[in-house]
Structures are given as C-alpha cells and as structure tokens.
Amino acid sequence: MKNKLIFADYDPQTGNSTVAIRNKYGVFQGYATCHPDEEYPSSFAGCRYAEIRARMQVVRYENALLKAQIEELERFYKILKGMKGFNPSSMECKRLRKRMYELNAERNKNKELLKFMKAGLSDTIDKHGVLVKKLAKTTND
Image 1 (spheres, rainbow, N blue to C red):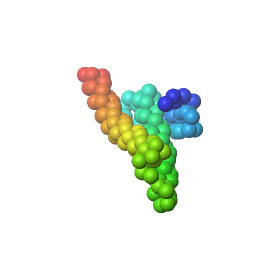
Image 2 (image 1 turned 30 degrees about the vertical axis):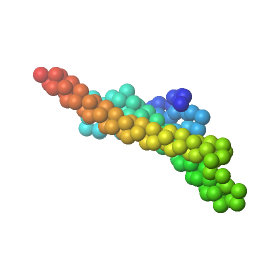
Image 3 (image 1 turned 45 degrees about the vertical axis):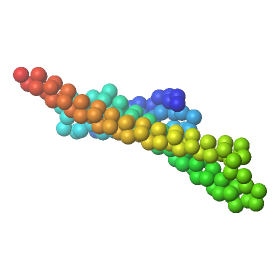
C-alpha cells in the first residue's frame, strides 16, 4: 500500500514526535516520546518511531476491514446453506469459499506483519539506547 507522509513534527522541549501519513483509507497519526532525561534527544529517532506507529495503525485498520468482509461473506454463506436448492459444489459456492480463504490468508499475513513491526520497533528503540550510551561514553572520556 502506498503511504504518503503529510506531516512530521518534533518538539525539543517535551521530546514528543508526531507523524501523519495518508493513504487510500484516510489519515493516520503516530506519536512517540523520547526519554526526557536523554542527553542526546533525536528528532529523527522520535519521528521514525512515530512513523512506525502510524503504519501499525494502517495495518490494524486493514485488519478490521478484512474481518468485516469475512464476517459478511460467512453470513451470506450461511444464508445460502439454508436455501432449498443449495448446491455446495456449485461454481458460486466454490468461489465464495475461495474468497473467504483468500481474505483469511491476507488477514493472517497482516497479523504477522503487525507482530514483525512491533518487534522491529522495540529492537530499533533498544539499538538507539545502546547508541546513546556509546555517545555518552565517548564524550565523557
């Protein structure tokens, strides 16, 4: 999906970063706060974390849409099953089941992507902390 960055801001007094991205679903905002005691606050790092959080919101929104589509198709399939002339081997029923399978696969892929993004954000924050400690050590020496 194509995301367009429309706004990025970092406040050096509070350490708060805000990023807004736009895509076909709308505008999503991500927020991050750098540690106030940090000797080297980074606007780049704060905006990067906020952007990752905004992208995570996009994935969550897509999952919600997929879930609603899957539930609608399942309801429709149950209605079809209750009809008198229902034929489970008809081309329409096969296509309906295939579409539900495809949507479920896409939703599961998005769930894995969300887990990966969360782990990546945590790892990025940890690496930034290590870098700040190294910078502090080299400047104090």
